[in-house]
Length: 330
Image 1 (cartoon, rainbow, N blue to C red):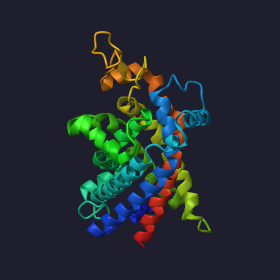
Image 2: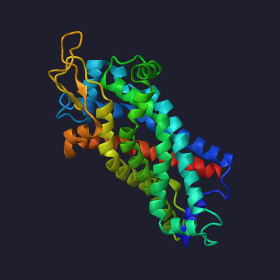
Image 3: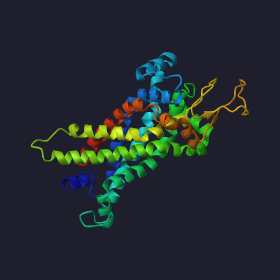
Image 4: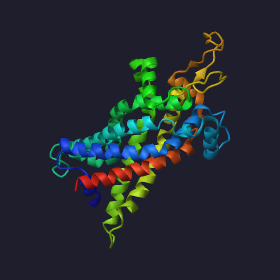
C-alpha cells in the first residue's frame, strides 16, 4: 500500500557511515535551532517546578517578569550554553540512532517484501517498533545530555551556582563525581525516554499517513502543510507522556536555596547536621519518595508552561530535521 511505501521512503537502501553522518547532521542542527530559542520558557517552567510556593498563582508572563525583576534580564536566558551544546549532541545521537534502528528492523535481512520474518513482524507492528526504536535511541542519547541538563537545572534553581555552563559542569563533576552524575540517569530517563518514544513515533506515523493521503489530491500541498499538524500532535502527546518525568527531573536535580524552610524533593530533619549558619541542612529524598510526595497533581505541575515550551521545540525540530534529511537523501 501507499502507507507501507512511505515507511521505506525515508530509509536508504543501505546503512552506511555516510547516511549516518547525514542523519547526525540533520539531527544536531534540528536540536540546536529548536531548543536554544526556547530557553526563556524552560527557565520559567523550571522555576515554577523547583519553587512552586514562590510563583503560586502566577501565569507564564508574570513568572517571567518576576524572574527578570529579582534576578536581572540575563537570568531569563540561564542555561543557554548548556542547552545549545547539550541538545546539539543529543540530536546527533537521538536521530541517527532512531534511523539506524528503523533500518535494522524494517529492512532486516531481505526486507519486508521478500518475506523476512523480523521485517514482516516489525511492519505488522509498526507503531510498537517505532516506539522501541525511539526508546533505545534515547537510552544512549541521554548519556550525552545528562550532565549538561543537570547543570542547567542547578543554574536555574540557584542563580549563584555558576557563572557559565563550563564552570557549572566543572562544579557538578567536582561535587557530584561521575558516580553521582550516573546515579541520576534513572530520573532523567523517566522524562527523556517517553518523550522521544512518543515524539518520533507519532510524527513518523502521522506524517506518513498525511503524505499517503496527499498522494490522492489533484495538487501537491506544500510540505509544511503536512509537517505542521503531525509535529503539533507529536508535541502534545510527547509533552503529556513525559510531564511526570520532567517534574521529577527538575525536582530531583534542583537546589534548595539557603535559608529556605521548605523545598520540593527535600526533607528538613531536626537531627540532621547544621550548616555554617546554624540552619538545618535539607536532606534530598529518593526518586520514589519524591514521586509519592509530589502526587499526581504535583507531577503534572507546570504542564501548561511546558506544553508551550515543548510545542515550540518539537515543531521547529521536526520540520527542520525532516527538511534537511529529505534534502540530503535526494
